[in-house]
Length: 303
Image (cartoon, rainbow, N blue to C red; front, side):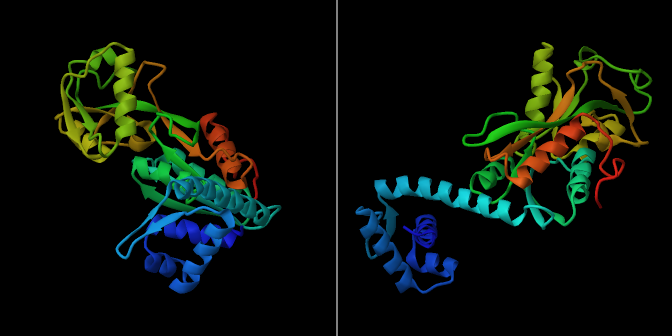
């Protein structure tokens, strides 16, 4: 069995259409059919059922699909590792879920591209479910997510935490406080994002209130943090946002929460291959960010 045959099999298994699979592979349909027949003969199993109208995987084909995906992913990781040994170019593929592009993420990008020479970062912004699928399928090295739930087939590590700040209209009775307890805003109208847009953020905030045995009975639903801040500025609601998101804000009052566990945690998903140069570098730098260690530039890292 050759890797070429596995790639042909994977394309057909995902397209379930010989013409589309051949086009995806950049080859003619006849050589693809020949390759699949040879693979079936070599394995002595039927991988696909075919009629004039459709093609579908057999039970053996379904089992091979899982194994072939794992094999091709391992080969890609090994190849990438060999290509990036030493000081050679390193491509780091990040999948970004929800609205995570705050100061810690900015620092991550800066550190990744300055920590070692000739490193470049590719970023794709996707939904929560899509980032996990992209890593699982080998299309990204790591995903950053606010969703703390475990994802099948993926390792999950804490990336960093960022303090949640209470956003209030200027002149609010709590606006001049040094810090505010969660219980003090239990009666306030709270602006929270839609679960379809920011499921991880919403789950973390709701869990924080639940741990402190506080019900969120009065809420207004928004699509983005910008809207939540605007609502707070005009007295329509109060909001909870990461500290870097409202750093330097002048139209609202920003007050820290007294709860020591009031952090918004970003999680890192990866396929379990910690020896991959891209994965290990992201994990290393995320740990520095979480520990608030000075930046790479301040440590004299290579630029």
